[in-house]
Amino acid sequence: MHHPLIALDFAHQETSEDAKLAWRLMFSPHSWKGHRATDKVAAHYSQSTYISPKNVPHNTSLFFSGRSALKALLTALQLPSGSSVAVQGFTCAAVTLPILSCGLNIRYVDINEDDFSMRLNHLESLYNPCIKVLILQHSFGIVPKYRGEIIAFCSKHNIFLIEDLAHGYMPNTLIAPDLGDRYCALVSFGRSKLFSSVFGAGVITPSIQLHDLLQKASSNLPQAPKRLIVRCLLYKGIAPFIKLWYHRGGRIFHRLLLWMQLFPPEITRIEKDGQYDASYAYAYPEVLAHTLHLQLSKKETLLTQITAAIGEYRKHVPQISRFPSPPLNRLPLLAPHSERRTHILRHFRLQNIFLGTWYKEPVGPERLDLAAMQYEKGSCPTSENVGTRIINLPLNVSQKTAEHIGLEIQLLLLTP
Image 1 (cartoon, rainbow, N blue to C red):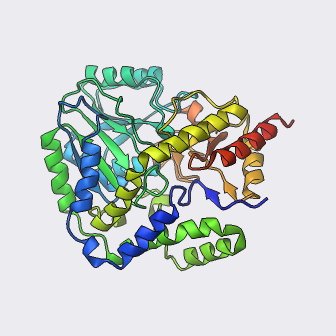
Image 2 (tube, rainbow, N blue to C red):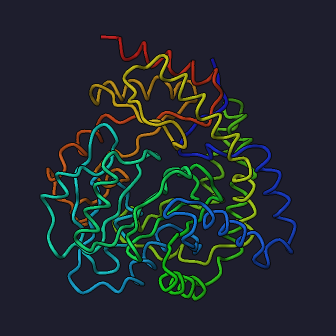
């Protein structure tokens, strides 16, 4: 049975509607100018109640990439020499490389196996006064089990908390206790995220002073080259049709486009070699904000689809943990061992269904030099074990497709 391409790492949220807009923008030079769409995107996130009660104003600064957003944020904090940042040992280079590029140290904290986020007792055992910042990652969009306790820990030790919301889209009920100006949140609009403009990120903060510094940093960044923006629009304009016709020439066409380098890489060769790459350090383009605003306008429809897909998976795969439902970006499942994971991934690849594997290493992508990331092997055993077993299930699918995937996974897990 042949399915249209389902690939969590390739345009999983792009539709024909997104493609039509991308082609229209390509030939509408006026839409590349001004700030109308970027202002709408910033307002959308600023008006949420992610990080504080509604009566506390907060502000959003936009950047071309999450790496440049995090680097600008850490620079704006003006941390003393020798400072450390606490990061969980189940993350990616987009988090660690900006930290290292600022001359800061990393303290890795192990995760819980049931929410894939920072383990409280390991964090407490690692604490020393050099830790000035903590990045609390919402893996797959799951709210961390010990979120409240970790916020209290940061408050007690005067640690600046960065809540990493890049994987999902937080509900309005997610409110942080008052940390004053020692708090902000990161959101991402990269191609593997829930809402995408191919590239993009934002920093949300209640601090006017910090926001002013971030706005200054953003305004000092160069504009993205037109060629790069065109490649982003081509990605949106072509990807839905590659997915639809993948088994009838789409695969070959996709490989041809990659060989021609028409699609910009999500992770550059420099980053894969363990070095921070400033080649995506640009201001967030107005034209890409138009594409993001379209996806945000369809938010409720997408979240309904995600809820339905999760429901189907849970009917057939009892091993899936009972996380709160949306807004997850992808649904995590742990295979009993690495060999079974390999078998499951291969089984679905034959049907043009490419399941995800965030993250195979404590710091992804795979084969990254962990020593260069300041990671000591064995320091986060749960993270390392999870990396050998993790599977990510797609949520931007119909109930019928989720049922099909769920039923087959059930059989594959039961097979001796």
